[in-house]
Image (cartoon, rainbow over all chains, first blue to last red; front, side, top):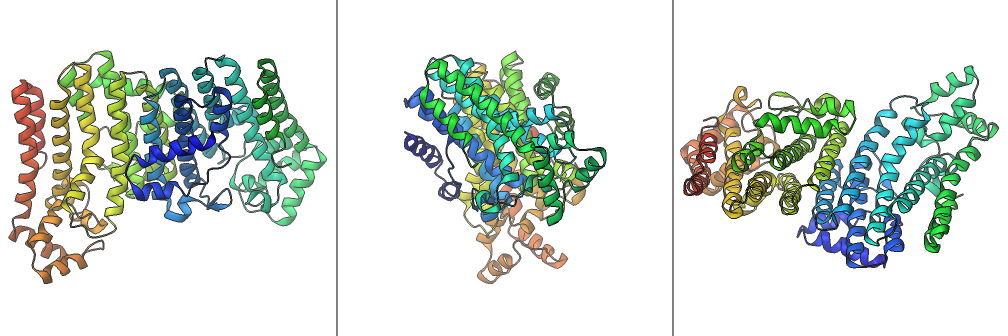
Length: 298
Length: 298
């Protein structure tokens, strides 16, 4: 079924009759198509579901193109990013083409679905900006951080679930919460992986987020636990290259205060809540997707 | 009536509750609001017209933010561009916020209007890319050039007119052609002004388009007229800084072959056709708007 979504994306892009744009779009690694998977699992594979899933995946791809420009990322899922291959300007322009084509197709689907998905793109774009602005300073505000990752990452996953529920005539609210929890947990786990994974698994250096200025949840928790002098030490390391001994100090402090366990627990709580909702709803497939997220890479 | 559109844009942006984003958006010079003016003239000032005009102006503003990043433009209408003030990344992200908010609001208006406007954004984004790609080589293909400026500039003006006609229950086709002709002529005149205006009028150096690689209509016409040796000379000057004597040579050749007159005539033909349509339809206000475009800056 996922192949139908891939084909629909190709059809949408193909109908633009811009071969060089289509060629570039093919270079974007597809990833696991989490959003499309959720939608198919919730709502089956009718034309409107396939269309909406393709639209959501195009929006996601467009956001990745712009994200990689914003983050100066040379790689995406281990391969060269579009901005690295063709330059930032191409990535911006092709992102705009993908976004606008997705919105054009969105106008043709159910109005409530269009509302939910387009609202998520507003959240996503605000979240991306917050991520950058917050990265300019050491952040100790957990609520602000949670809101930002909700907007940046969870909003579109939430919208995909809710949109699928609308198309399947299922209870919007339950699937919305499921999607949101999965999305927030997904980003939390991503942030943890940046700390616990070596470069081989992740394709980027450990503690990279902190070096770039992103004070993710584990750093916020760590800061809460540290003594006054240590707090200053951590702050002084923010948003700059770290020496090996500085890296080791941070990692030892994470260990000492069981920070990773605490952050994992927070993500798992969200996932468990999502699983609970799906158990009640008798959605075995969606339970499995949530469970799989837990072992992503630990 | 135009003030109602400005206020609606402010309301849409304000409802995002992102004060620093709203502050940046206020720095985008409003320009003449051509698209909104056309819509109000065609369809009056009902809520749906004001909403749609505000949406179209937000889309236009978003496209300018991204355009200025793509073109490395430091100024926009004589004042510092958003990318110059806040950096390219901010301009990309705030452009995405504006685009997505506009699309979110677009979902709530008439479906046919949404279709027309969203299709124009696809054209616009494809056109922007073509403009850049075509600028990498000396272009002698008039049809390709005309298609590009239609997509880049005219498509959204055409869509604004057509959308207004739909909302006013007027003949879509007539207003569509009117908007398209005005849009293509607008870009042709813009391209001519780059050649005939001094920096004071335009806020940028004369022949700047050619220096940047853009072989606009006058250059395509000039190339057709030049002798073989001169053709090569012109080509050798493409996409690089020009000495004063090189500038003077190009300008003298434009004069010799009456190129500016020929290019103006082509723009005026489109405007006259638009005026003719409006005369038949009894649209005095729209005739005037078209006439005004002729004296823009000559």
